[in-house]
Length: 336
Length: 272
Image 1 (tube, each protein chain N blue to C red):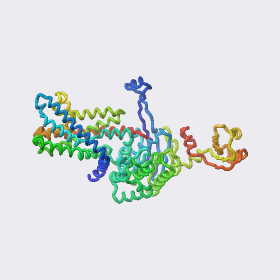
Image 2 (image 1 turned 90 degrees about the horizontal axis):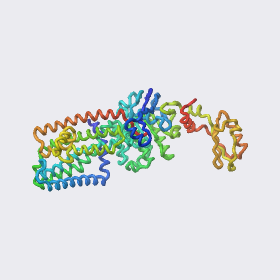
Image 3 (image 1 turned 120 degrees about the vertical axis):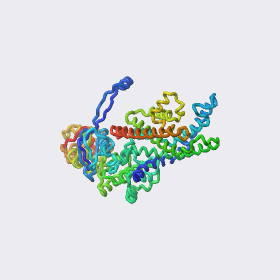
């Protein structure tokens, strides 16, 4: 469905020196700097897959998405979406895709929401029956009727996002691109968005590409993630696998009866590990410890803390996906 | 064809609805427009009052007043302003939202402007036309206008609309290659205003400027249709004037397509 082969995008930047002198100098002779925003990436996504595409800011995510949607022309390499080359056949490709760019709306700002949908109906050349069917479906799962007569500029963020997701799926596209779709939304709104996306995928086998910093979105929706860093794809596999193999830490939260004083725990020397390998956080009656599970067992750590404190409650967690990803962003690589 | 019109007509509908949405917006636009027309006419009255001759460059005061009224008419008939749209779309990054739709951006833009053009025709052209008719009757100057040429005038104005649109659209592509828009707008507006005859009739220009105006397309936007309706361009001159307009439409249309393709392939879409 989506084939990406050796995709590269270079941007030319003109670097000017600092200050007024540099500005004038730069006017005549600026230094040309070539930046590789996307560096020789390749992957294949099959129909119906829900893929998370994550990376630090500036890693090349948006640039990739812009090439996939046909907005940007690659410097080299190949992209095919359902057989079509998007930047060569932008209009053809656009018929089959839906896009939600979280920060921006595709709706008509000043007009009532209903007008936007009617305009989109004509743009996507939808027959009346199909349009009615889709509108009632989205009205049901996203409760659009509440605000469908209001101008888009008067909508709350949550309402606008719901409207945008309906707009992106109105014509039943084969591929849905989501860029930060739940940004700024409250817990309930986030859940509704995720449900709508899941429903479309189940009902129509819509392929979904999700770019987000919200790893809960990824956890709930995606069975596969691609991590991009500095223009290169450094991981392509399942979420499960990354947790399994890369999640080498465990976290235990202890709730103790007495307020913790400032005494040093000295756990590093107790367990014979480097202090950097432990992450200890203390807050009121809660003590949280992150430790390497291959060097210290859960039993050992628990035993030690029970011995020293009057423990009221214990919670044990696997490595946070956040932590794993943060480390990947920091290190720029995944060693499995 | 019908599908094409339904699809792109939707964009025109959108921009027209936005234009008429705010009553104050309508009032201010119309008021400001006619206010400046009034001022211009008063200016000419003052000029003629101080002129030793009744005729200046072939125009009596009445004829000059009609010229300005008709220029006002052609101005609103050919009103197309893609420059601000393109600049806004691009710098905001919202051009990406237009590019993900299954419609050519260039054609989307044309129809968006058509929506505003419709607004201009409803709220400015119509009243101006009535004003011209009223002034004609009131001053018993019904021969000042070549009413029989009206259909030709309309056709010529239609060509003028396309010339105006393509020329402005080509200019707006600069937005993709440079960061400085403010000066650009003023520059383009000034050039169009002067060379379309909106400021003063082109035959007022000194020789070298008149020649320059002949090499630019802008005369075809307003001056040519205005001269036709004033009955000052007739017969063979009229045919060649229309011919010149047609050539400009074709030439600029092709140039617009080429320039746009180039811009699109090199485009760096903001945001992300």
